[in-house]
Image 1 (spheres, rainbow, N blue to C red):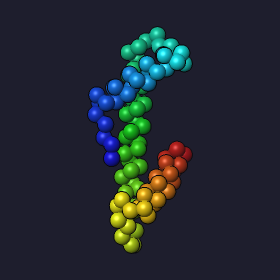
Image 2 (tube, helix red, strand yellow):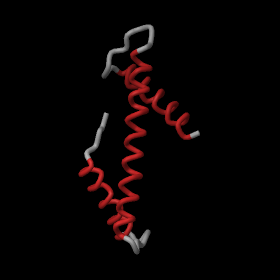
Image 3 (tube, rainbow, N blue to C red):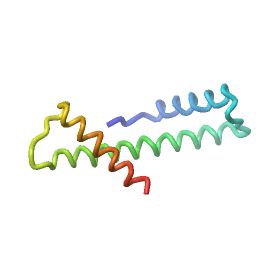
Length: 91
């Protein structure tokens, strides 16, 4: 799981806003508000990803046969289940 610190999320938010500004894809009359909203979106996104990760890992562990973490089968199942859970969450 990727529990990002607030400082990392803040750094990413600054990169996003700077990239949008540099590529002339957006103007931000209220820089503070734009930064706060970007941080919140990133925080929510990573929190959702962590939640899905937990669900997927539990699902793999609950299989009747043991699937060793790091194995090719585990990786395939992880990607499959992650996509399934992501689709469920979007609905």
